[in-house]
Length: 460
Image (cartoon, rainbow, N blue to C red; front, side, top):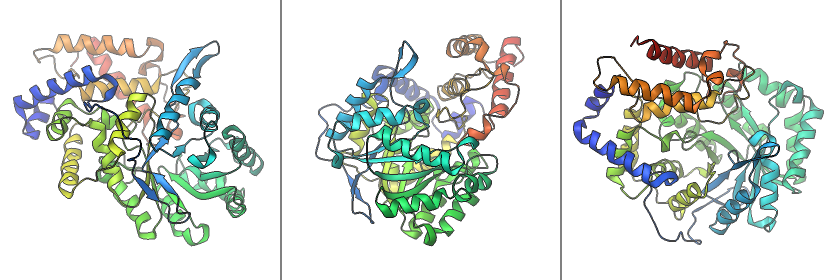
């Protein structure tokens, strides 16, 4: 669909163009504030809490996702900026955040250690630790290797108990059911974790879900056997009804949440922003949201949507910068649940976004490293950025085609080094098995490479 057709269907015309330009200008001036213009101190005593029905813990509706800690370049290459992590954790706890979600797999294996260092500076009863058994590689599927990973989490996090332990990303992979059984059932790890829960070293046991819906349904069908204390799902206003349209292997969040609600299982929400995509929407979507709430950030709509559902225990956000944390604190200190009319407004917004789709990459970097050196996340992020800003050259007949063509190609070379661009993909499909969004990455890389080559050769 062309940009003109998109505007026509939205019924916004020239007013939307002006609004889009204004929104882009606001975003540029606000920088990392993600279009939010609210100022003033953030209250430290207004955080919204949800009660865990089993333990009666009061859990902050804003949870800290520790997958994207800030980094700096040191003598050994890219390292976690521990001082920045400490500042973020201190600020979060001071404003009532008490749920911190990490994994042995995050930040190239360094997240648990950095999280443990930052949290251990505070009284243990001030926070809840969530981590995962991230035994993705077949070399970690044995009982011995998985138990070793489990015990290492305690060491890295400097704790004698895990408040929320998850089986990590069940359903992911080419054969989700087989991997679920190999990682947790046949090796006895699920039974082991249940015994650890009985012993009190695990206070709540659950799983995070990606991919094969048969695995999700099986895990819930066996709820009487395993007594899941919580389940982590992907939920946002785009995935509520459109997840399967984005990718046939995905499952609409409306179904996932509904199945948990029927069983009274608390939901922990991941990807409320789809890896940042719902804070970097098309300029004309920005204009639509800003017209309703000029002082609120685009991201705040997504966070309020996730938090409005009563069965949600906490909503995770990977807040790399202080500006991200402050914006989310403003959304949840306290949470103002969406009205029915506002929910309908977001459903309509999601429908409009589906008319101008981007690649459903959430920049988790699970696909990396590519054995052939391709920078997959940067390629997909750059392409999505051009889609959202309406900067994809469409036809040589367009008035600004030459300028747009040059801007795309120059920007591509700046965003991704030539030797790491999409034309070097050989289609080995190693990345596909690691993608939580089930993206056919080689197919998308081929499409983007073909588009770039058509621009270079003047074939559009």
